[in-house]
Image 1 (cartoon, one colour):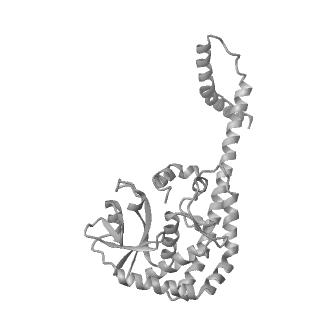
Image 2 (tube, one colour):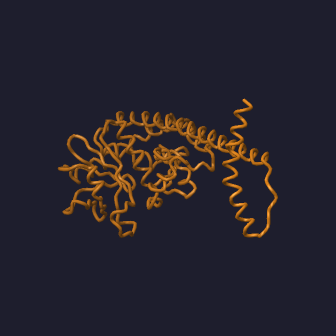
Image 3 (tube, one colour):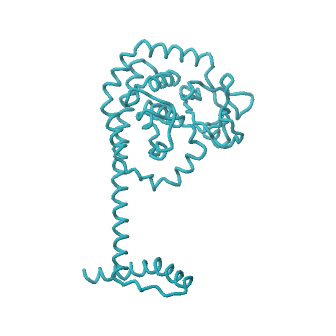
Length: 304
């Protein structure tokens, strides 16, 4: 044991000396004077201090990852509960499911305080859990990537083929069509493709250009990579059918708010669990493992 400790001490003395003594020697050269030597015991102590710091950081990260895993399980449970609403309302078409979801979010039935506000602060963005964007909806706030993230999760749990689609939207006043600034959801069922924008509660249809999709005066540009994910030879539902189903579904939701209120009541404790566990995450923990990926994902998307 003593021999092992001695080896460890020598190893960290070497590592510390290389990192600490080199700048000290440089400083001596600049000052033209010799600084007092650093005793080996101090170097070893510094080495073990660094080890302790790394171990402590690792334990905190491990605890945070465990908490994130618990949040994931609770979130999945909420999504499973939510799917029952589609069955109760007999909503099977993607547009019907889309309409119910938007109504539920806007009325606060999917948020802890029964209130949802569009937007996200810089601090909230820093603490966002990558891969669990729908959690932000439960916390009571969100932007397009959160809207679309939870809708995509609902579709997948419902057995609908769906994906998040990163697009350029004209309402941001940007001029680089290849840099996405908005997120929507694509869904496919019974041979039809749907481009659904839960943030603005609209659906998009093809235009004369294969890259441009329109909804009234609004349009989105889908770059070649996202178009490749969409597939070829797509058939879309008619705008008239979409609007009819959206209006009908919204009316059904409005007339059955008691069902949605009961859903909120039955799941409020789960919402609170997520809120509390999210608060328990280390404040400084900015998801080291995902940091680089986060910068890529959030680049040009922070205003969604």
